Image 1 (tube, helix red, strand yellow):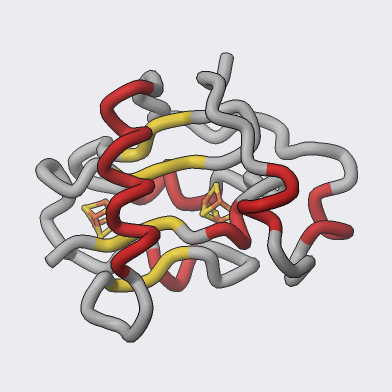
Image 2 (tube, rainbow, N blue to C red; image 1 turned 180 degrees about the vertical axis):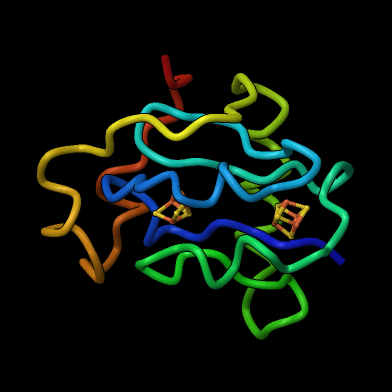
Length: 110
Ligand code: SF4
Ligand code: F3S
């Protein structure tokens, strides 16, 4: 198993999660993060840190899509180990529906 980041991270990208991961397995896209499944040790520490509940165990229902997206993009994006300032309008994007279809950006974060 692994933990995954789902689409509620998109455009929120609060980055509280990166500070607590003991193995630094978060990777940064332009507007969301991904967890690398091969590196995640399933400690679960990051899950309660996300203010918008975008982190889940892949053992929960309907997580296959997100597990694959995390696997694919964690291979493409750079590792992130320190929190940066989140987007100014992050709060506005919590719980917006269909964020992946409408707003996902496959480019790397900077
Ligand atoms: Fe890192 Fe643990 Fe979260 Fe996996 S579950 S991403 S190892 S903090
Ligand atoms: Fe995203 Fe939540 Fe981390 S919004 S960057 S998964 S703290």
